[in-house]
Image (cartoon, rainbow, N blue to C red; front, side, top):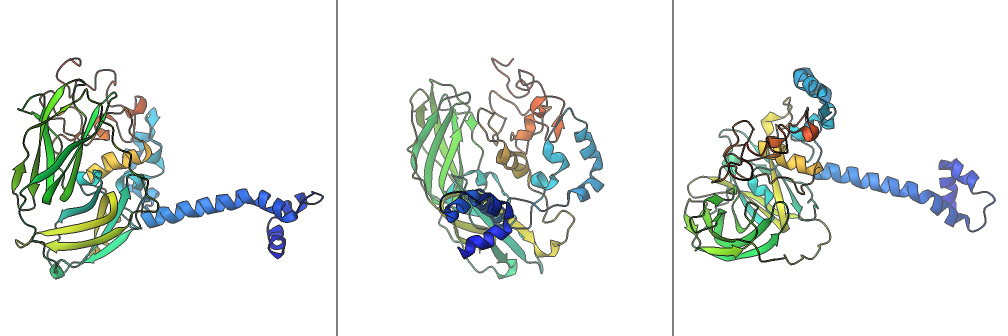
Length: 397
């Protein structure tokens, strides 16, 4: 009861309300105080994980306005305003040093246990901090891991044998909907980047984006195809030395229903088991990351000499700022696929809409990031106007 006497002094209203009530006083106190305890625990959990997982960039928003006042004022004048513009510049633009992390390439979109990232470090007397964080399919994030890197002192030697085989190619899943999807997976006998060439005949004509991080596990989601048709495809893989292998021609029938086997839910959080740099015999640098379960991996490379720079540890790269940041708040459902190239037989790179190098479509391709004159910050009319910028065939023209 001594504990409850202390609590009654902290919450005098609760003590007064308890007078005259029947039943054990301890039970009553727990019933009244439980909501307060739950709130405290929830808030502590959120902020503890937000800091340790590095999801928030620590940025002085008022300092941003001093140099970028024109951009901010133009956005504030829009009929439809993106609310983060006036409060959180750093969320979409700046790498946060407190457990900072960022996607380095399209490879961060894949869930792997092991990835090999090509890195370039400046020569001279410069050292780096490489921050690593992983997130599994349930959205659970690993504790932030930092690795000190001295480019001149990298001793690990990566001497992987040249690629010879592509194995285990299979259709993992098919989904019907506004934008039907087919998921393919395969493995390689050496670290490689790979993609899929596909089409309605063995001439293919379409291809998925090429990953930028090397792995022995591979998968891809294809989203541009007609329901009820047989498609041809083959896998193309390139190892770290530039050797290329191609699989034989294979097919899948989009009228066949293939449902992915539900994966067992894993408790706890993923853990980055290993994260370290290697050099190849020809002097190139790679960074190997191994995670306890299939996860997306982000790297944040900070040059120590850059401490105190006005933009912290730098700007988020375009792919991260224009896709990953968006889907943190706006989950994709029936929205248009992003992270794919608009340059195909039936589509073109939009002349009047922004894309990344190679015609890669992002959220910003169709939406203004700060606000706009149309709903959803649309750059053009969503009914038809925006479609014909890319699509050159029926039913769009």
